[in-house]
Image (cartoon, rainbow, N blue to C red):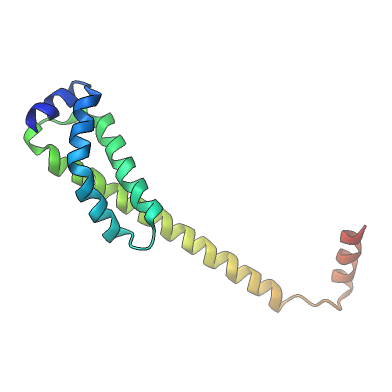
Length: 122
């Protein structure tokens, strides 16, 4: 594996593909733990981590630490996806609350709403 790391660090795409093939089954298993109900996020995490690792390969100093380095990249990607999902869920809650507010304060008999309804009919 060390030879593949050295070649991949020098820009050899085939060598990196071999490394990715060796690591991706474990990464997919871990991704399933990070995102049990979200298969698209599982796949995204593995692909993004491998893409970042390939891009940053020249920065890898110790070829013997390649595997833990890739898993650290992978964990950071998973954390980023979780944060993104939480923000999306928070935004969904905010939108839901705002729609409830609108329902609670919508007075269809008021003159303002009648005027608005009349505008939308035109």
